[in-house]
Length: 105
Image (cartoon, rainbow, N blue to C red; front, side):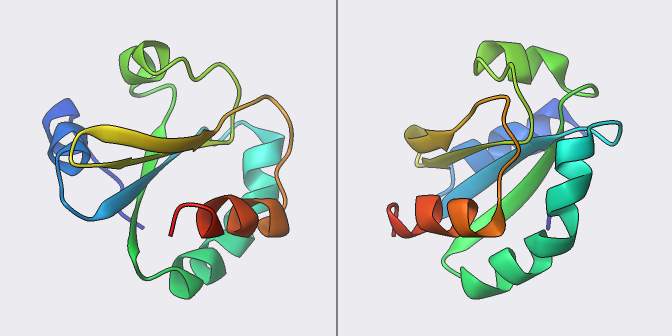
């Protein structure tokens, strides 16, 4: 999982040809803590995606611009275009995330 340190780094993944999953999260979020242990497996099972973990608090402007009001949330982009989003305030299970990603392969 890539953890960007700047807005420029985030922007560089938006324009990539490979499908990129932006995983919006925050360390204080209990629903995020719930899904953290499953993320390495999800990432390993989906090698066609690049996974980028975006701290919602550190990059609040990005979260606001992308209408990320609940976390954890997932937005998939490729070549600057949004392909799909799994964005809401509810806890997400590994199965729900995998199903969402399968629909974008």
